[in-house]
Image (cartoon, rainbow, N blue to C red; front, top):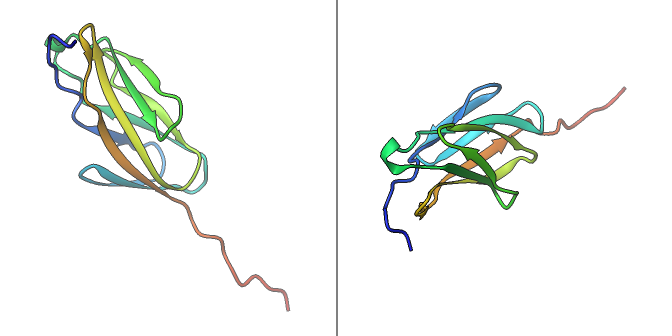
Length: 118
């Protein structure tokens, strides 16, 4: 039973390292030149009074990544284009917060067509 309630990290931001990212509420689009593309997921840390031990972030159904507090970022690799979901929770000695999510759409250039030699 959770005897102390604490707030989850309330925002996940994708830090720019390459490509262009457009953010709209809990949905972003990443324009990548090639795949896989690695971005840095970062979030607002919980207040010290929440006594967060670690954050857990997961991309789709891939293995979750544990990030020890007070760190609030980790690299995330998107191997495929299309729709993805990042899920983030915070854990302290009393339990785990509700998840916050971010929907991510990864877009790469389309395949050229009409190649021909005359």
